[in-house]
Each structure stands twice: as C-alpha cells, then as structure tokens.
Length: 275
Image 1 (cartoon, rainbow, N blue to C red):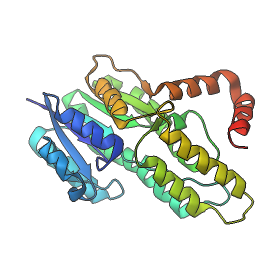
Image 2 (cartoon, one colour; image 1 turned 60 degrees about the vertical axis):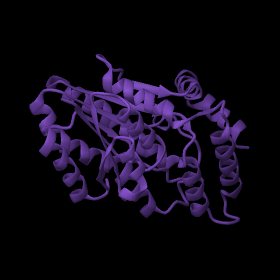
Image 3 (cartoon, rainbow, N blue to C red; image 1 turned 180 degrees about the vertical axis):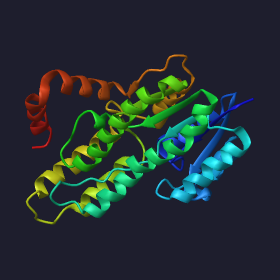
Image 4 (cartoon, helix red, strand yellow; image 1 turned 120 degrees about the horizontal axis):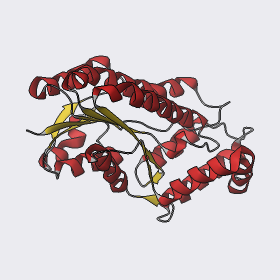
C-alpha cells in the first residue's frame, strides 16, 4: 500500500522538483498537479500521476481531491506549494493583483487543506506541508503584499498544527530563501508593471529590481529547487518532523539577524542594500 502525495503547482520550480523527487521514492503515489496538464506531461513519464488543479477554482480543487479519495480513501501528504510573487510598492500596486495573489497563496492553500482534512482525521494520520518563505519572517521593500501573504501562511500553519495534532496529523512549514526558479523573473515583471515611470518610487523600484536580479543569480545567496524538495521530503517522512524548515544558509542568517537585531537595525541594513 502506498501513501498518496498531492502536490500543487508542479509545472515549474519547487513543485516540479518535489514531484520528481517523490516519484523516485518507493512507497508513495505522487499526484502532480497544474492548471494545464501539458505543462507537466514529463512528470507522468517520471512516474507521477497527473491531475488538473487550479487553486483558484473550487470545483477544480474538489475534483482533484475526490479523484484521490476514490482510490485511496484519504490524502496521505498534502504539499501546498502553488504561489507567486506580486511585487510593487504599497501605494502603486494594483489591489486587484494583490487579491489574486492572496487567492493563490493563502485562500487556495486554505481551501485545499479544508478539503483533505475530513478524511485525514478519519484515518487518524496525515501530513500537511505548506511552502511559505523566509519572506514570512522578514520584509524587503517593494514586496510588502507578497510578504503579507506569506505572513498569513505562517499564521495559518501555526494554528493548523495545533488544531490537527490530536487527530494524528502533522503540519510543517517550509521557508525557502532565494531559489533559482522562474519566481524571481515573475516577481521582477510584476514590479515593473506596478511602477509608474518617473514616479516617486522610481529609484527604489530600480534598486529593488537590480538587487533581485543579482541575488537570484548568485550561487552564494540562492539554491536550486531541489534543496527545497529535499526539505519537503524530510517533513513528509520524518517520525517527528520539524515545525519549520528554513532552506538556504543565507535565509537562515537573514531570519536570525532580523529576529536578534530588531526592526531599526534591520531597516539600517536595508538602507545600505537599497540606496
């Protein structure tokens, strides 16, 4: 008997690397999902099963979960990975885009969790692994709305971990730092779209864009998506999984620096980075 693993957002980056990693491991039936199945056809060849799933669509989520329940009775491991970054200053960013981001990063995650929990509770076991970000522990300028969505993921995960523990369900949060995926490019594009040419924040936007581009390309500051996939695998298989897995040495250093030095000192550090 294998453990069914449902992973959202597997068309690229962390989700794709996670699906491929679980597909290579015995004892798991991997359900790789994306809005368009043609984007993940190669994962089927690697041993995963494919499901169409859009975390912004109630019926799509319900159908995907029902497909797994019909065969297995419950979802063994849910990896809430789907998400994207909507970047821009607080004043300039279109709130319609912000709402779309929260629908994907927060409400989609929450609803899919609601859909798998009844049968997990009935089974008396299960793992829920939410992919957050180091951006849920600290904030960079130009990313306030993205960070807000990841702070929300932190809060929901902490509450969920406590609420579901009596039912044998273990909940972990993955907090990646900079990962070399298409995320950085997507975030930079949303920053560009949100900015007003020659607006009051044009110098800040330019500095954020340049810093983002150089940081994501740096092998010292960033890591490949496989590093996050390995942390997700540990959270899914450890007898006593951690509550949080911070991924990349740079992310660990930044999270602890922000915690230890406080807001004023961290603001001073940011002023040096974004002159």
